[in-house]
Amino acid sequence: MKQISSRLYMILIFFSLQLNAQDFFEGELNYSVTYEVLNKNIPISLLEREMGTTFSAYVKEDKYIMTYNSKGDLGWSKTIIRLDEGYGYIEYEKSDTIYKYSLNDNKNKLIKVSRNSMDQKKNT
Image (cartoon, rainbow, N blue to C red; front, side):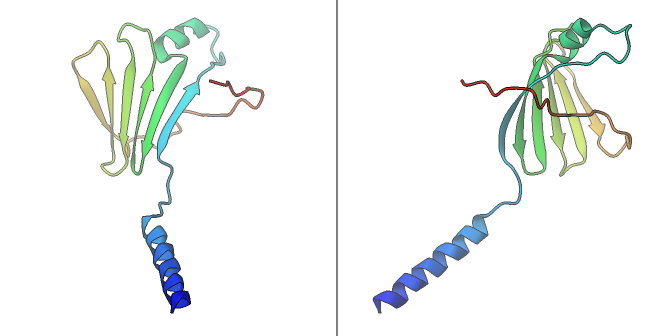
């Protein structure tokens, strides 16, 4: 009898874990950004000031938020992506307007993200 109850307990645990399993990443990511000059008329210092040198991403299923530490005229910026709605939103520190745009309008590649394989992990 004890063996049957322990098997039943294991089966219940297995099915409860399967019901609560998720197929997506959820959490916080912190990035350090470096820029490569493609146009000599745009200095790296301008890109760093306007776009920031770091950003944080907060990821949940079908939505994520990226906060950039830009120091330009509008201050930091926050981009909110809602895949479930099909829209993105941009908010700036020194603006009272939140900009909304459709994610389906632009079919071109907007940004290329690549990993710096020479970068070392910082111990914090």
